Amino acid sequence: MMLEKGLFFEQQKIVNTADTAVAMGSGALSVFATPAMVAFMENTATKVIENCLSATDTSVGTAIDVKHLKATSVGDTVFCRATLVEVAGRQLDFEIIVTDACQNVIGTAQHTRFVVDRERFLSKLK
Image (spheres, rainbow, N blue to C red):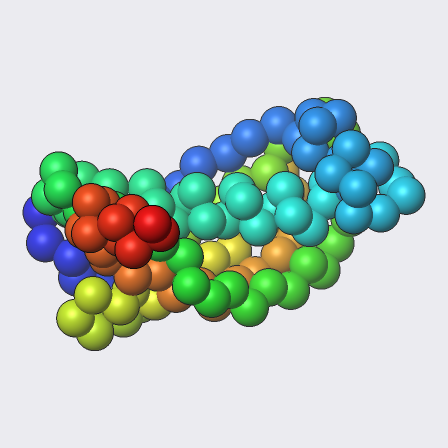
């Protein structure tokens, strides 16, 4: 499969106590935390392209512009859809939307990832 605009992936999860602002240290309420939502968004984006990359490549997130629009309770199901909207060489741009079971928009994001060679990328850390 080729990396091309329009590819998408959807997944869902049930918000649990580990996903809350209290548990993540990002707030004082037991609601779906923004950092948990961002991780869910990035995970969904990686799944859009996972079958398109060679065994030696992966992708790394480099930017995300997030809007967290609605609180979500523990036990609620949230749905995430990431769509690949631009391919510019190794740069991949995604639009991401998270909704609840009633299709209310919980959050949106513009997200950029870059395709990198795993070994080459890790060798730069030394």
